Length: 108
Image (cartoon, rainbow, N blue to C red):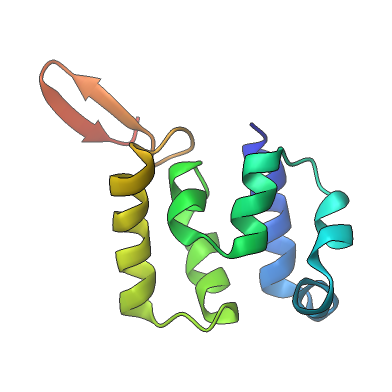
């Protein structure tokens, strides 16, 4: 997994109009320029906010990606919750799910 590569891409996408244009027009060549595995590339290509969240992407980056996808705020929040239900606990990053005894704890 290349959490850094996903977040680097989202950072550029959120701030650079040229990256946004390329994302809209022809995603595959754009994504090929980033260190992403197949699962990460598919989640970004498909705009799967829930999967990106579970893979460890920072919510600040995702909350700017969502409007680029035409996703309203409430739908964005729901997508993250649904991602955890569908794909399991957050795997990496600052939102990673850890356990302490019988209790699940978000973050590290």
